Amino acid sequence: MCIYPKLVKRIVGEMVDDKIITQQEYADILKYSSKMDAVVEAVLKNKDNGNGKIIFCSFRAEIDDIAARLRDNGIERVVTFDGRNSAGSRKTILCERNDVLLLQIQTGCEGLNLQEHYSEIYFVSPFWNPAVEDQAVARCHRIGQKKEVMVYRFEMGGFKDEVAGLEVAGLEVSGLEEDTVDSMDNYIKRVQENKRAIASEIIA
Image (cartoon, rainbow, N blue to C red; front, side):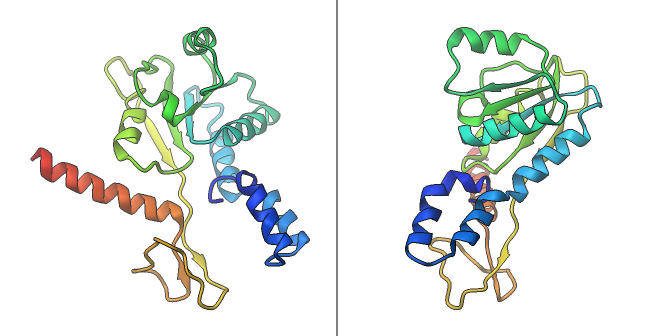
């Protein structure tokens, strides 16, 4: 829901059937995605700076939506790389000099040398394992890179609780305003910090 509301279309539809939300609210939920808007806006703002851009996503529908929106806004060389690509097409994609490469993070976070052309990285969402994100950044930030590497992270903030007694299972709300509920992104970020701290202690 934080990433792309259409990913939970079926569940939101059940909320209409259960009369939790109205049909109009259902339509509004699926119409907007502030995070996707922010990602596309940031990439378009930087589209003419000469830097190849890698966008790391988690879901295929998310990848397809961003790719379509970037193409519609004038970026021609936009390619996608995920579990749907054949081995042959993957090799072709990685050898090309594209403006934007959308990668499914589980598919392309390691084992790829992309520093020759790409120097901007966009994380649409935080990933549970911080080592996976570190590996993803290392696709560009490695020996042979001649440009400064820019990393952009998009995270949803907390939101106002307008429902009395709302409970969000497993999410901590400490450190927030009294009427604010934490976002999943913030929760994952704290999990990342805890994992980094544990790893640091063990390695030390």
